[in-house]
Image (cartoon, rainbow, N blue to C red; front, side):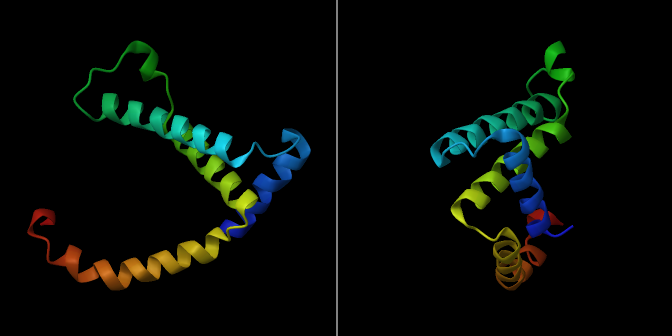
Length: 108
């Protein structure tokens, strides 16, 4: 699915259920909170911190989806075409990083 379609789905959800977008600063704070929840799961499940019983119930996919949702909200309310931005970023990364990663002995 193209990112534009996903942006449209989120926009329609906001219109149907969300009343309006939270302001940009509120959404930025929400994004930070959601990324923190992802970090907590990763640190405890895959890192060296011990995982508490309550953390074992957390769904990493759901938390990552929360991050995506808020990013899509921010893109919509600031007029960012994420498909265009993503395509541009992938082109830059392919040109800039291909040899760098291929020649990195740490990745062998």
